[in-house]
Amino acid sequence: MTIIEKILANHSNKKQVVPGEIVDINIDVRLARDFGGANVVKNLIDNNLSIDNPAKTFFTFDCNPTGSDQKYATNQQLCRNYARDNGIKVFDINAGIGTHLAIDKGLALPGMTLVSTDSHANILGAIGAFGQGMGDRDIAAAWANGKTWFKVPESVKITLLGNRPQHITAKDIVLNLLHEFGANKLLGYSVEIYGNEIDKLSLDERITISSMATEMGAIIIFIPPDKEFANKLEKHTGKKINPVFADENAKYTNTYELHLHNFEHLISLPGHPEELISVIGAKGTKIDSAFIGSCTNGRIEDLRAAAKILIGRKVAPEVVLKIVPSTDEVWNQCLAEGIIKTFKEAGALVSNAGCAGCASGQVGQNGPGEVTISTGNRNFRGKQGKGDVYLASPDIVAASAIAGYITTPEDIPEQFQPTPKVRSSVHNISQINRRKENKNTILEGRVWLINEDNIDTDMIYHNQYLAITDIGEMGKFTFGNLQGWEDFSTKAKAGDIVITGKNFGAGSSRQQAVDCFKALGVQALIAKSFGSIYERNAINAGFPVLTYENFDALELKESCWIRIDLKQGLVVNLANNKETKINGFSDVQMSIYKKGDLLYL
Image (cartoon, rainbow, N blue to C red; front, side, top):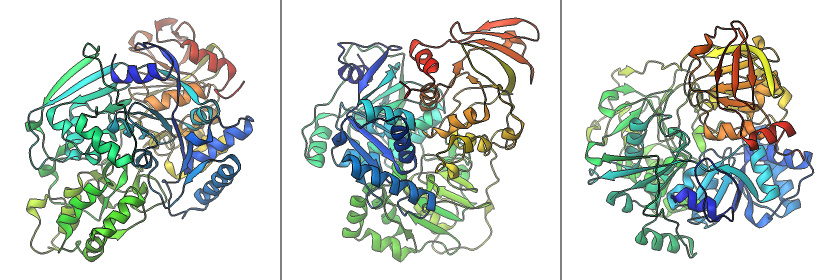
């Protein structure tokens, strides 16, 4: 078996599991964040559910650790009160990013399972544990039952050959992987990465690489802990670990070999993490702000790298540099090593620990027309604000903050030059088309055709509305951040069906990106493929989502009517009676669909 297969087998009391099999797995660590936590609590209370094991259950307030937004503050206090009543530990607004805390504090160890309302919970692959981001229904079920269902994914093996060039950082490695595989080539796969240089990676570097599995559509990126790393991890956590390794004869759907000497400094263009060019190609682009932090690059090694470049220098007068450590422990380490002093003397703004820019409400957001270079993992339109966001490694971001434009550490000017630089053109997210839906095992409805891939959850339901817990209020925000479709909610009718392309629902774990369609009365979503978390959220909400390979035979036109047989996986164009097969419901999906919701008895 592969790593994922062994972990899932171990946690489902089975000797062996195979790809495609649906199993109930025991969850060792169960997290809910501040924005998702309130909905988790609401689901538990509304369905009269209790907590399976409070000792394995935690709140982590990392999205808005300043408590600066009234709705976030309200939700945080709701979670605190629930935690007090139920004996649940809260890692409050001074603690840092939940998944990092789970690793650093030894809550999760190699071979264990963790779920969180954080779509980057698969960061646990950095230590050889299984982490998964899930929506609030999933998390509520895991809190109540101690387990949840999971479909065993197929596995892919990637081997990185040769030696890592000296200038290539862990962020460069993962950006090169993203460049190679794009946003959906690894969609739905569990990935294992091997190589001599991989074994040499530090914990911080492993976290950087595993944290961007979500941006590649992967379930998780496992970096197996070799003996030396395992010893360091035991010292770091103070706990004995028992790593899980793939068998020598493990079966992989695909294997890839990539040569590290071909890797280079890359930068993601605004709007899409997977649209990458050489940093050289972006050199000279004027910036207004820079951000160093996030679950991808907020570790001590990242901040040391930035401090090494910033020491004795000043941030360009026209630039704001925002720095957010990933955890309070990292913040205090920066203080002890004089790194905070270096940041402040350079003119940077340093915040308390947390997720920062990619969670609205904390340090890191930008405004319309603002150009930002960031160490984050995600730069979807609207995710980190209303401006343009480039993604790069900490050394590139620090060098660019000093120069006032995108550059490399080797090419920082002696003095700030206020001469005009080429400003980024706004990279608009792709435009789209439409459709509609209804309900029953046989559905009929009007179609919206949206012929686009990689429509992410920020396009579907923007993060500024995440504090809303009333499903009835969510519909009006559907596609509100999808260029050209901002008025979708005013035109959609109950019973409509949406048909779209690959990787629909990429991005965060927000349940609202499913519930907004339910609020509008949309009957179903049909896509070539779905983001893994999004698909689970829809299934668990009893909302029909189906996948297809090719609809050419149907000769569909905008606003035509179709019939869907959910069980048989059959679609008929009612205008011409042409039909085609798609993937029908699994037994689990049909069971939840008939109940109406994962949480309904």
